[in-house]
Amino acid sequence: MVEPAESDIDTHIRAADEEFVKLFIDVTMSFGLPAAPGRIMAELFLAEGPLSMQDLSGRTGYSLPTLSRNVRTMDRMGIARRETKPGSKKVYVSIRSKQLHEVLMSMLKIGYEREVKVMLEHLPRIRQEYEAAARMADGSDASAEIGQALEERRKLITGLEKDYQLMERLMGLLGRFILKLETDPEE
Image (cartoon, rainbow, N blue to C red):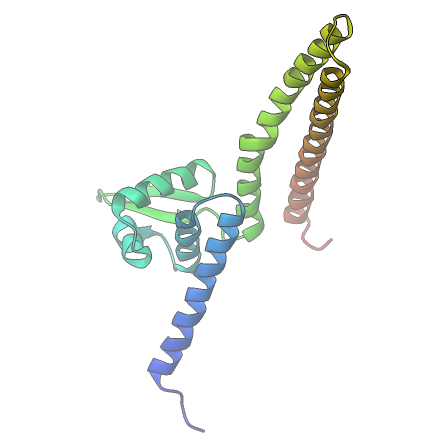
């Protein structure tokens, strides 16, 4: 049997690594994030251990300021960890968990904080404003068209509130399901 040349193996590894990175970029972009966090996350997943910011820059092609901004955000999201080693001023970065479900839960949490929670805080007030305007329109010479338009807006907002309440419940169920898997993986 002929042994494959080292360069053939390297070519396959590079191709698989590139596909892995592209996949992470696509997934993070589907969450509404830019490409940089996906590329950084993929490189951290592929790394054997923590990478210095300089090494991460070499792997991603991103400048140190771009990396710093993205890594800081990923650290706040609970995805990456920044650390320094004793006796060194270099900043090292690692993925907090190579368990993908934990990374996705962190991303879901950010989605919840950015969208679901915000919408659930503001939609009731907006609905109440439409309802107040509809009550005022009922007791005035406002046209039936205005009353109908206000009723349509109220229905829209009420529907959105219900949808976001369902998303909040779904995220809670997902969180509990993942915790259950982590504590009892055999089930």
